[in-house]
Image 1: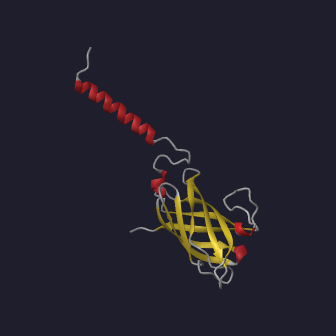
Image 2: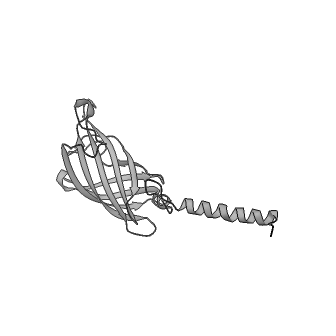
Image 3: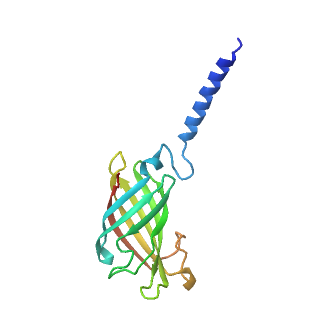
Length: 179
């Protein structure tokens, strides 16, 4: 039995649809699959950021996360508090680690308050868990690691095997900012 051109076009369309569906559902190397990145993407208000070892108990932050894993953060101590030096906005990356879980790594530079010289680099490693199916709110933990600048013989803050000068931990809550 010979297929006419309409039959061949129908079979080709079904095959193309199947191929595109199976490809879209396959995780890439970073684990982004099943629309996970699109559910996470957005801006969040981070509240109750507590780092007891640094004497900080009520910092707030704003974070924007893209669907492909980019993170941009600024917080209420960017210009320095009694316990901190002024520092840059934070830039980093996130990836899925579970059903509603993400891991985030962020880098920021701290400066000497008078001359503005780069005095150290923070690597923030965060684990967040969304509490709802809509990915609108959740909680998390963080580990902040302090490194001297590479120009002063410091260690590479992107190398997970580099030993930090200081390591402190904390917790936070977050909520999605909606229009």
